[in-house]
Amino acid sequence: MGGDCRTAGARHKRVWLAVALAPAMAVGALAIQQAAAARAELAPAAIPAPATWPDDRITIANLGHATLLMNFLGSRIITDPTLFDRIGLAVGPLFTIGPQRLVAPPLRPDQLQALDVILITHAHMDHLDLPSLRALPKRATVITCSGCGTLLRPLGFHDVRELRWGESTAVGDLKVTAMAARHWGKRWPPFGRNYGFNSYVIEKREHRMLLACDSAMTEVFGALRDHPLDIAAFSNGAYDPWIWNHANPEQVWQMFEESGARYLVPIHWGTFRLSREPLDEPLRRLVAAAGSASDRIALRQIGGTWTLPEVLPHDAGIANSGAGN
Ligand SMILES: [Zn+2]
Ligand SMILES: [Zn+2]
Image (cartoon, rainbow, N blue to C red; front, side, top):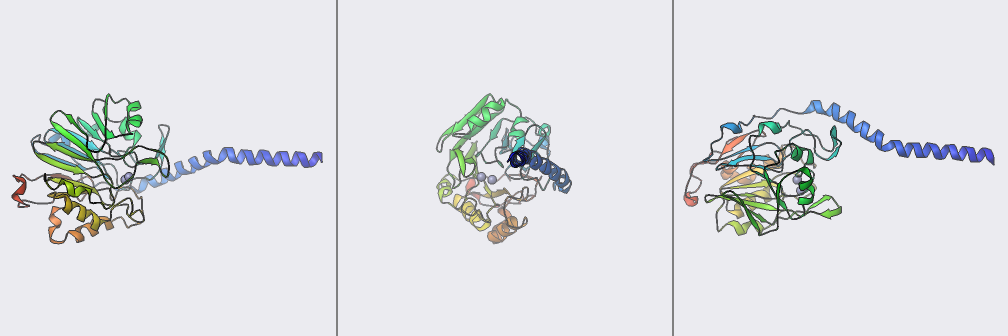
């Protein structure tokens, strides 16, 4: 009996040890995997030079995934910043468990120039990235969805504004209005708190841009036709098998056309592998869907920069297109 007890006790100890060490071993394995995978990152196609962008134009750079850096007629904006090699769960300051970038960040945080506004559409890990936000200047105004303030204020930002759909706020003479999308707002799906999700309409001096929040197919953007948009940025990627949360390229083109915008900026492609479709498929299918209007698709390279052509008024058509890189 006594021998059996001792054997059972030793077995228990071994089980406990294994349970206790498993997370540490998993983290260690991921760290090794991360170190090995870090070598596979490609260089971006170009490097933006935001210091040279004029304040009387709308200039946009694609920093990868959903991160756009913009000079919007003098207002400097960044959207959903992911500026480091990984997104996911940050474990201390040293590393993050989650998907690794396939293309290196085109700019470091200290190369972004001054920022007036940080736009956060929702709390998904690939949009609200805590390490990236920690690295940004805290004097910038953060505009976000109705529940995201609790994640953002502890980072030290002085001005965090939560908007519900239909609400607007102004930063200087830049107006930002929140609107709907077909998406969801839980940070740890399918569990936990719903932080909400926002698309945004950015306006200044009668120029307007839509930043559509990771939307699946929906008719809501058709409501914007009456006050034409210059630009609409739609997420174009992560649709296989997530078609109920993300639009496929044909649906993106349809929503873009319904929005009445002149130029389409596709985002959310080619940076992180979040889904099953081949990496080059989203842009290829989008260009095919656009057919003879494909010159309205701007910013097709990670690291690319594009400036809105000066064509006014809005009903002048697409006379002077040039999709840039
Ligand atoms: Zn999302
Ligand atoms: Zn996303």
